[in-house]
Image (cartoon, helix red, strand yellow):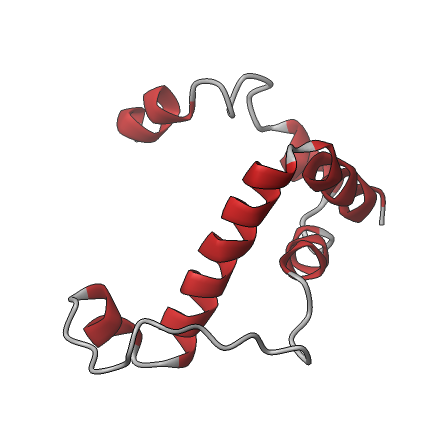
Length: 94
């Protein structure tokens, strides 16, 4: 639950403009996932450019908290402390 609270606090600390942008990106991702993801990614979707908010869906931070709670603490400790700042370097090293 600590991770969940950290995610909430981080989101709430963002400027409103960034919170709105994050919400839009989450909505786009959800809509693409709910529809046929492969055609949406290829731009072949016949869906109009409207997004419908699903009020019954759990917030993204709850989903992230639920998934991350399944990872043992020992595994989290293996992550580099500068992973967020140097993600591309770590990602490209494979």
